[in-house]
Amino acid sequence: EGFFQSDVMTVPLTLDALLTPGPAVLHVGAFDVPPASYFDGQPVIRLDITADGMRRLAAFVRETYALDPTGHPVLTEHPGYYLHADSHFVRATGAYSFPNTCNVWTARALRVAGVPVSPALAVTAENLLFQASRVGTLLD
Image (cartoon, rainbow, N blue to C red; front, side, top):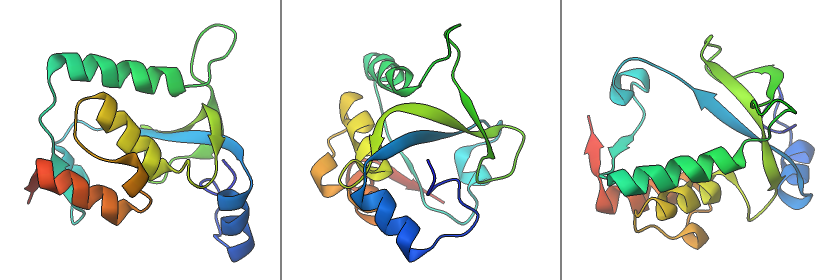
């Protein structure tokens, strides 16, 4: 939580996030244009997921949200990366540390959805994208 919401990334903050399990957050954003347009200049990979896989993926993500007493996700006070009205950090269940990183969590989510990726090999974003590119389609 502290690492991803910090305005300044420092070596001590990075080491603390990797080595000391701490509160986790999800970065959640909404957009109404194709992903390749929204993330212009960044790699976007289309993955074919069945309807059943999407239900499992949605359940996996839903179980990650920390909920308030009324059952709603808990937003943090820090805005999302894209400083857009539809981008937020949401408190999550579990703890963040190495090897339970965002890339590994994403690989677990994709695996639950039926995408053949290995969470153990998804330590970096580059490796996760490499794995996804082997089974998906890189969009321009």
